[in-house]
Length: 246
Ligand code: PEP
Image (cartoon, rainbow, N blue to C red; front, top):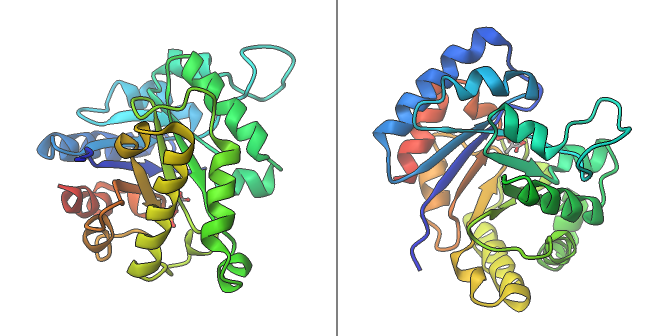
């Protein structure tokens, strides 16, 4: 099964209007690589302006509320983000699971709400260093994935991002063998739940991906792209990763 590579930047809590020039530059890089689906998940405050400058890239958000509206001070619904110009949304990032106490059930509900608002979803899973060192990474992350999977999960609106927590922002990555084994395990878990859809669903790797390691990571059979933090903040750093994808 050939799956179109998906390379998405996660700007986290970085980016003011001055960085919109980087959005434009990354949009131009995306246009040079039409075989790759390229996107930037920017802070919500930038979505509207970024959507006007995105070129061949798409713009996404980094979280949404699980409810469509209501008394949730400071939160944003999926519909609000879609109206602002988001086409994709990240849910279940480990920084939110850890700092905001998001559970697998919350993540599944957010993904479901996003789909209902017409957004596509990147659902993040990943293990802590303790779990990796104990040799339990594949079973723990597979269980996390199945518990976080929304009803109706399908490859045309959902992608998975495997992000070992200990690799995020640290410059460390698992061995290629470990990444390959994890992605194969996750695809098998998906197949047990959603059958044939599992073959078409993209599973991204995230965690210290950069221009030096991206090609090797994305050459692995079940690695269908990347979710990229620090190295997506400038076109200069992001371009080699996009190029490595195709
Ligand atoms: C992330 O937080 O999604 C991420 C992959 O970050 P970094 O690339 O900076 O490790």
